[in-house]
Image (cartoon, rainbow, N blue to C red; front, side):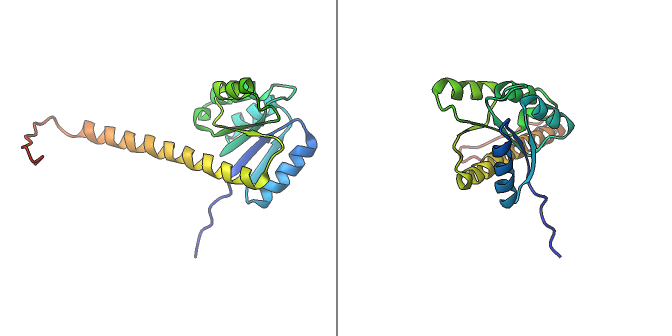
Length: 160
């Protein structure tokens, strides 16, 4: 008997109802468990209740723009590690810089190439998991080093 992995939980925050519907449908077809909200404030509230595996935030929204939402999500418990992708029609340097300064993990420009977006989501998630695994490994190594009593090692020229 094989156990199926739980679908990736994805939060979409965009004030454009049509885009939310299209994004939700396309990403559900791609196997994601999608939650859609209409504002940055709603995205922060949704993340406060239960962090998704990844969040896609539109930049320009009433009720808390994407930059503010990103920064606020980062301040939530566990929010520092959440992959956040900013999605916007603004591809100027200032917008990109602001996104990364707010804590974005990646930046996608509209119109959205859906096939590419699904690959980028998986790539960003893989990177986030690698960071979590690295932190766990560092904690494990630190615990092992603390458990070893002080000692002296003599090493010869051959490294033995």
